[in-house]
Image (cartoon, rainbow, N blue to C red; front, side, top):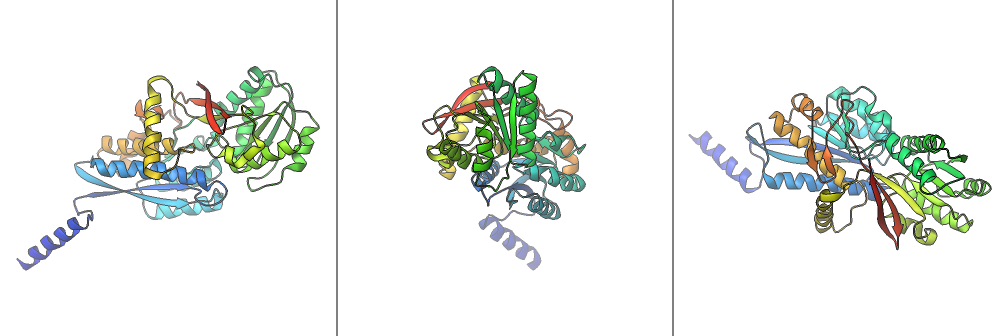
Length: 380
């Protein structure tokens, strides 16, 4: 009798402190992004997208297999470094998380995917666009954005057909993302009948581009494409201006952030930059994305940078599969996740193909005017 009384008291204390009871199902969602280093603003944006999804799921009182689920976000920093990325992945695997959303960069997502595959943990990247990510034969690997073939290809065609680029220069940062998207851009330019005047390389940590830009200036480019992230693109735009290079500046989703105008300062003229973001909504779906932006700003007192809505959708797609499977056990909900069809997210409808790629992925083309992103078009 005394034992029963002690258990009842313990349960009451647990309830008072909001501690999950023995009947609750604790679901650990791992998230990895660079929350330190040059693109920490993008990593924090991603993490906040995951945090918002988890908070809302807990507020809703989701049940999985008849048990009330308590979701925990286990956030790790990979500093956009492949070694740190695999260490973070191993840490999450050791903690036996139920699923992972991340990583942000292709260069960290690709090596980490092997660890998640071996552990049988589903991984959805909200932003890794290198085609290799989903072409390794892993059953655990998914993404909710279009890949570089689509991204770089669309930008390459746009450079030739819409911007009428005659002499096009290409620079990349040698990362899996930067080099990958630049390769696809170059292929598409040539296929569209355009000419690549030259290609130069830098790194994702570089700050001085005067040498490669001086080489580029000698080729008189009317379009300059950069495969890399906004932390490098901003200073590059400043140095282009100081050298008198007035070419249109193009890039993928890595430069297409709300932070780019601040990083470029007075180095960016209105309409000079044309970038593409993997994803995009149009028509009736626009309201969902706009409502997300308002909700995000209210919760974190910050504007969405780029990927937060895709992280938010990735978490919710993963949990929807758990609910449908009646289990948060990766082995049980993974087959259901793979068959996701027509999930209505804030970033549009999400369905996966047999590689784990999002079907019919959209791209949004943007430019910048008066320091703000200005949408040009949504293409598929």
